[in-house]
Image (cartoon, rainbow, N blue to C red; front, side, top):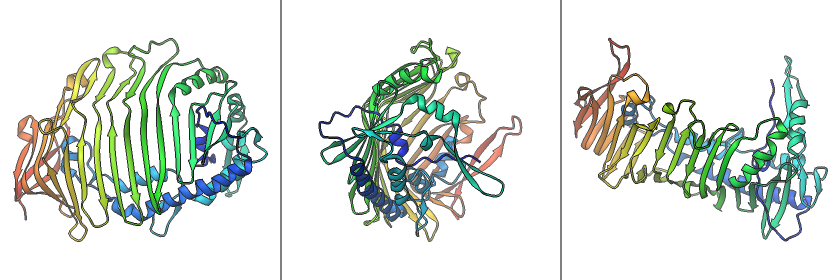
Length: 475
C-alpha cells in the first residue's frame, strides 16, 4: 500500500503563487517557524473550537424529500449539512474530539511544517526555501506483517526536480506572506497570507497561465492552449474566542478556457468556465454562542463542456445562486433570499435549449423559509415565504435520453409542510402543495389537513421506475 504524506498547509503552500512586493527584510527561518507555531496554531485551534462548539446548530438532515423526489435528485431522506461542513472545515484526516467531531491535529501540522519544510537546511537565503522531493514523493509501503517502509519515488523525484519548486517568504507589517517559485522564471500566481487571526489564499489566474506554459515542456507535454484570467481568495478568519468565518471571494471575474494544443478556444472542443466577481460563499460558526450563519452569493456563471461533435456540446447558463441562513441551537433555521439569479437558468445541447429552471419567477425570483425540527416527534416543519415555486422544462429529444414516465414541470408550495421520519409522510399544515407533471395524470394537489405519501413504482411496459403520489387525510 502506498500513502503519500501531505500536510494541510503544505498543499496551499505548494500551490501558492503570487508576486509579493514587500520592502521589509525577509524573515529568518526562526521567525517563520515562530509565526507558524503562534499564528497558524492559533487560527487552527480557534477554528477547531468554533466547529466543535457550533456543529450541533447544523442539522444532520433537511428532509425536503417531496421536492427531492419530485425533481428526481434524491431518494434519500435529505442532505447531511453537518457532514458537508465538516469536510469544508477539516478536509483531511484529523482527530476525533470528545463530542465526536473531526478536528485538525494542530500540533502535528505545526510540527510537520516546522520540522520538514521550513528548516534551516531547506533555507537557501533571502527567505526562500527549496522544497525537497521527499516531502512530495515519499511513499509509505506496508508489507504483509504491517511493517512500514518509507522511500522516495525516483520517477516522481525526477519530475519534481524539473519544476524547481521553492517557497518564498516575506513580511508585510504584521503578516507573513508565502509564495511559490516555479521554473526558471519563478512565476508566482498564488499568495498565502498568515496573521495571528487569519489565513488567506489568493490565486491569480493570469500568473497560473504563465506557469502552465513554462512547465509543460519540462514534463514532456505540449503547451496547452489556455487563456486564464481573474482572481479568487479563500480566507479563514478568527472573529473571537471559538468563533471563525470561512469565505470564498471571486475578487476579479474568472475566465478559464483551455483545450488541447492547436484546438480553437472558441470551438466546441474547448472547456470554458466564467463567473462574475462576487462574495461567493461564507460560513460563520460561533462555538461559544452555539450559533452560526451561512451566505451564498455566486454571480453569473457559465460552463461549456468539450465535445468532439458540436451538436452535443453541453452549456450551462446559471444567472447566479443566492441564499442566507441563520442557525442557533434549539432555534428554527431561518432561510432568506434563496434563488437562482434574475432570469431563467438554462442548459443547452449543441446550442439548442434542453432544460430550464425558474425559482419564484412571479415573486421576485427568490423565497425564504423557516425550518423547525422536533427531535421528540421526529418531525421537520417548513414554512415558505412568499412561497416555493419551481418551474422546469426538459426536451428529451435534445438531451438525447429516454423520455421518463413523466416529467415534473412545477413544484408549488404555498404555505407550510411537516415531514415525519417514522411515516415518511408529508403533511400540508397550511395552504396547499402541488406537483404538476407531463402527462398531467401523475401530479397531485393537496391542501391543509391532507398528507402526501410517495411510492416507488415500475412502468410495466417500459420497465422505467417512477414515483407515485397519493393524497389522503392524515392519520
